[in-house]
Figure (cartoon, rainbow, N blue to C red):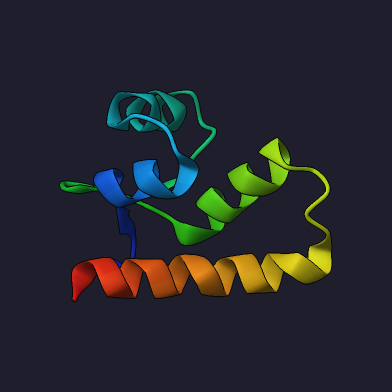
Length: 77
């Protein structure tokens, strides 16, 4: 089983549409860990957030990664 994030959840985290998530994967801005079903890597979501919000310092990257994992756990429960 791949440990990726579903498209719908990735869209919620990034505050974008699911169609835009698919586009970001096609364009290489988000990394897929599986294509059937499409699952997005948590690290690529974190990297995208860092790119969009550059004032998130490296020390906050760990906290952001933790928050993403917590959100995914809550959604899957």
